[in-house]
Image (cartoon, rainbow, N blue to C red; front, side, top):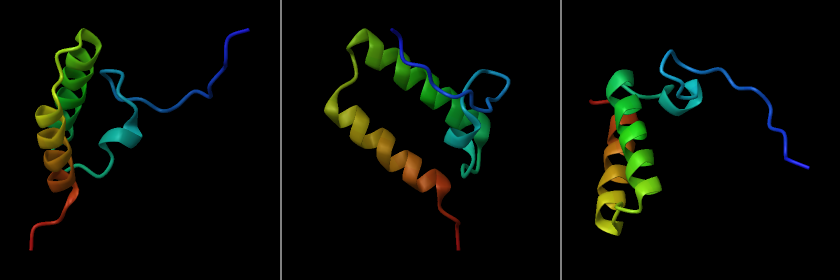
Amino acid sequence: MARKFPKVAKTARGTPKKYVRGSNNKRKTENEIASTAKKYKAGTLTKSQMDAIVKKRVASGKKKR
């Protein structure tokens, strides 16, 4: 029997809203999430690329002072 997951609110492009909620530039974040998922599924995502993506995601949510 397949597992069932609850429905979540999504953006127009299909990304869960929770993933882009704290971002300063939501469209850019959404594009980055989609491209990362594509690379991951293809098996071409390297450790250094993932480290750079994580760093960028953290910076995207921080407030500039």
